[in-house]
Amino acid sequence: MTKSISNQIRRLRFNRNEMTQQMLADAVGVSRQTIVAIEKDKYSPSLEVAFKIALYFDVPLESVFQYQ
Amino acid sequence: MTKSISNQIRRLRFNRNEMTQQMLADAVGVSRQTIVAIEKDKYSPSLEVAFKIALYFDVPLESVFQYQ
DNA sequence: ACATCAAGTCTAATATTTTATACACCACTT
DNA sequence: AAGTGGTGTATAAAATATTAGACTTGATGT
Image 1: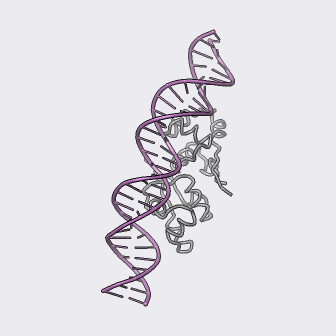
Image 2: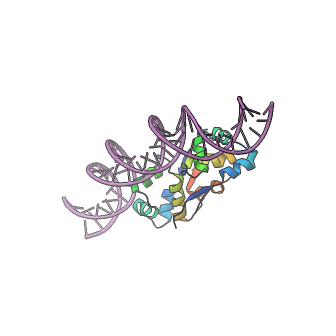
Image 3: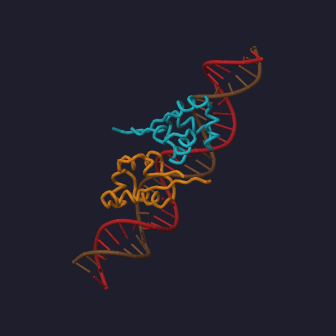
C-alpha cells in the first residue's frame, strides 16, 4: 500500500518534438540532472518544478505525475 | 510574471470537519509545522506531500494548490 | 576511425523542505 | 484569574531536492 509517484515526462518529451532532456531542462529552468533524476524516479520533484513541467507541456499536473 | 504557488488548505480544513492543523498533519503523516508553513506560504511542499493532502481531502491536486 | 550528441552514472557541494522543541498570543471556559 | 486548545513564530538539526562537473556508453554521421 506504499504509494509512490510516477511520471510521463519521457513520453511527453518524445510526443512533443523529440525534445532532449537538456532542452526541457532549459525550458523549465532546472538542470539536466534534475530531469534525469525525475525521469528515472530517483526522487520526486518539488511542487514548483512539477507545476513548471506541466505548464510547459500545457497539460494538467496529474497527467504528468501520478500518485498511486 | 513571477508565478507562485498558493493553496486552499485552510479553507478545506474548515469546510471539512473544522479540523485542526494537528489533525490534518496526523492524517497526512507530516508535522504540524509543515502544515503551518505551507498554509502561510513559507515554502511550497514536496510533490509527495502535495499529493497526500489532495488525496486526504479527496480533491484534485489543482484544487488544493494553484500555480499562477 | 573519429567526432558528436543524447542519455546515464557518480560524487560532492548547495539549497530547500521537514522535523523537533520551545514559547507567545488569542479566544474560550471554569 | 487560571487553564486549555488552536495558531503563529523562531531556531537549529535532519532529510531531501537541486546543481555542477566529470566521465561512460550507445547511436549516428563524416
